[in-house]
Image (cartoon, each protein chain N blue to C red):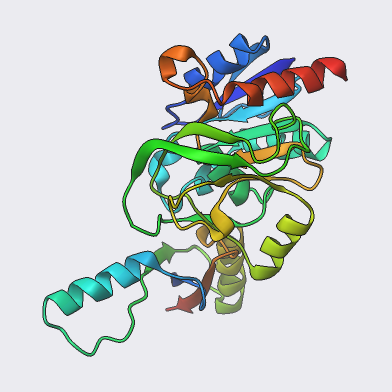
Length: 79
Length: 222
């Protein structure tokens, strides 16, 4: 089955890249953008077919490698 | 003193780091990232600067999960010394041997210049040869050197006197201007500036030399 992992900086961690994108949008005339946060999407193609087992497996991958949980949070979507 | 310097694909300061250890009087073994063990009798492991694995995923993240890093974590667990410089510091935070993380510089630019550091603690083999508050001129060359940690961790680092070096000028947005931190047992140092590039008179500064000389003194006295 396929899994999609979203990795984002945790709330409260300043995101300098998101801030730069926000400034660039304002410069281009896109007003009313109050905040921009930039993250990553990681798509995985797994052998596992059981959703519960897949979710557990991907969570372990996130804790070990895909996210740095000191500064990042992650969510796992399966389909 | 027997030093091991690790090379990952994309390391580019490994030779400079080996030369600095050698000139401080160490015997140096070069170690490849796929090696599963450190050479016998290694006292200190040097993790060099560079762009291990092309900085893919996060700086240092893939290197931190390489076979040799398991041996480095075990070495640190036995009370061994580790010096991680620049990408090496990023690797050490990714292995969790050191707290916190290194984020994109607050100005988003790659910063490559000589900066002024302040010696924040002299209570370590690395910094024992300096005087407290001594100012050092040492180059930095990084895109992701903005040190961050939780408020609790920062307070712990400060209270336990584990902040080894701070920037004496605004550089990259690091919390509390932190440039280098020590492990709880004070034998693992991670720092963004490059002391191996401030080692010989031809470098323009020799202020980094004492980090290697201090290690040498600590390890030969032991």
